[in-house]
Image: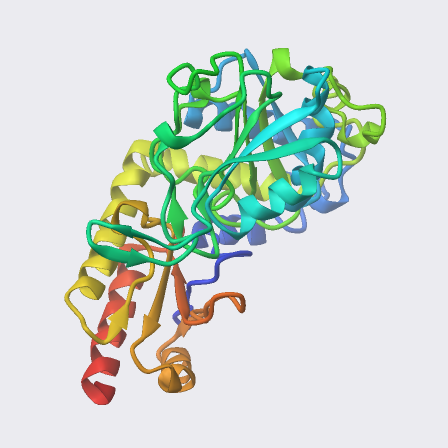
Amino acid sequence: MAVRPWNFSPGPSAIPETVLQQAAAEMLDWHGCGMSVMEMSHRGREFTQICSEAESDLRELLGISQDYAVMFMQGGASAENAIVPMNLLGRTPSHKADFVLTGIWSVKSQQECERYGDAQIVASSGLATVIDGHYQAPYTWVPPSHTWQVRKDASYLHLCSNETIGGVETMDWPDMAALGAPGVPLVVDASSHFLSRPMDVEKTGMIFAGAQKNAGPAGVTIVIVRRDLIGHALPICPSAFDYAKVAAEKSMFNTPPTYAIYIAGLVFKWLKQQGGLVEMEQLNMAKAQALYGHFDQSGFYKLPVERSARSRMNVPFFLADPSLDAAFLQGAAARGLMQLKGHKSVGGMRASIYNAMPLEGVMALIDYLKDFERSHG
C-alpha cells in the first residue's frame, strides 16, 4: 500500500487512518445489521446507539457533567455565530453580548451578532502593538484579560480561543468573576483546537466547535451548553436551531448529520485509545515545540504571531522572499507535504498539525524546511 501524503490542511483536515479503515470496513454493513450507517434511520435502534455512545465518549473525554447538554448540530461554526445570539441574547432584556476580537473568526462572530442585538467589542488585538520590544501586527497577539471591559448585564462574552487563520491561541480562559462579571457566561468557539487538550468546561457557559479540525468530518457541529442557559431563544430563532428543542430531542429534532456523527464517534474512541486528552496534549506540545523550535533558529522563515499566543494547531509562517512561495509549495507537494498554502486573507504558508498529524509528519516537514533553506537561502 502506498504511503499516504502528510495532510496539513486547516479543515476539512486529516482523520486518523485507523478511523478511516474502520469506516471503510463497516461501509456496507455496520455490525451485522445489513446497512451502511448512511442508510440508517436516525431514529432507529442502530443509529440511536451510535449517537448515544458518541455523546458518552465525548462527555468522558472532556469531563462534561450532566449540568451541560451535548448536541450534534448542523451548519458549522459559522452558522453557530447566528444560532448562539438567537438562543442566548434573550437571557437579558437589553439583548447585549460582548466580544473579544483576536482574529478573523471572532470578527465574523461579532458582526453576525450585530444582526440580532447589541454586540460590543470589549477587547481587540486589531491594532498593531509592541510586546517585549517586538512589533506585532494586528491580530497576531491576545489582549490581556485584565483589559477586557465586560459589561455586567451582558447575556454572554464570546471568545474564539484558537484563530485558525491567524494561528493565535488563547491558552488560559478567563474566570468571569475575576473580570468583574460573575453572572456573564463565557461562550467559547473552540473549533480548531477542540479535543487537542483538556478544557475546563465548568469555566464556560458554552463551548462549540465544527468537527472538521480534530473531531471528524465536515457536517457536524458540537455544542456543549449549560442547561440553565437554554430556553431563552428569540422569537425569530428557527425551531431546528432552538437549543431547548434540540436538547430535549437529544439532537434528533430534525434529521442530524448521521454519518458525520458516526465518524466523530469513532474519533472519540480513537482519542480514548491514545490515552485521552492529557496524552494528546503532550503529543501536540511536542509537535508544536519541534516546528516552532526550527523556525526560531532560522532566519529564512518568519513567524508572525507573538510567542505566548502561538497556536499549537495552526502554524502560519512566511518565507523571507515571497517570490519563492510557488517553488516552496511545488517542492512540498513533490515530497508528499500537502495543503501548506496560507489563507488568502493573510498569504504565506500555514501548517495545521491537528491530533491526526503524527510527530513523524511534522519531522518530515522540518526536513523539507531545512532542505529548501539550504537550496534557496
